[in-house]
Length: 240
Image 1 (cartoon, one colour):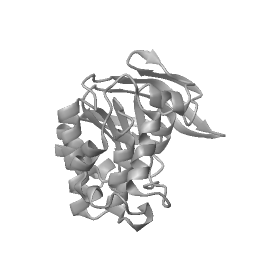
Image 2: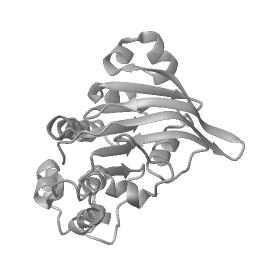
Image 3: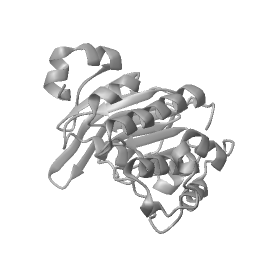
Image 4: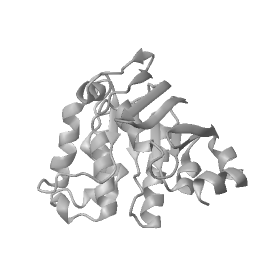
């Protein structure tokens, strides 16, 4: 997608829903050209973090720096043009459109500073979509829909990709396939990825760094392999 890896720096980010504090002074650095896994239980603040980074929510305080520029208050459309793509939970395809029509929609928000991603490149990365080009999206399996929404995001040629629970509800074989593709993308394209996951074991297997959120705060962070090997931490926060 791009050879220009982009750093994302979060500083003292606080987000509230009325009296409820969803994120409490969260700080983290997402290394350029690497996968950072954000882990934690339901209600830990993981989805809120991604929605705030992408401009869907405005924080009460704190900074979000993309390539050294504070982007708090920037609209989601402008964030897309700055090179950030957000794949929310739920595999939200446009069911009435074909696979190819869904993919072409992704190019409308293209980050113009980078070379275009072609449809052929997406089909090469996601072979199951190739044979379904003219099929309506509502006929796809859950795994194929997840491939489609990721492919659609990649059509915008992002330098930073936010993924919210891409493994949710999928068979282990499909999860492994999608995570292998993500790892290949990062290695080949120097893409910066923030991966929110409840499947901690799978996420840690492809991430360089991990951040564990607990009730809106950073409970622990460090190299992914170190966290995966820490039995006490795994049992306390990650459920395996």
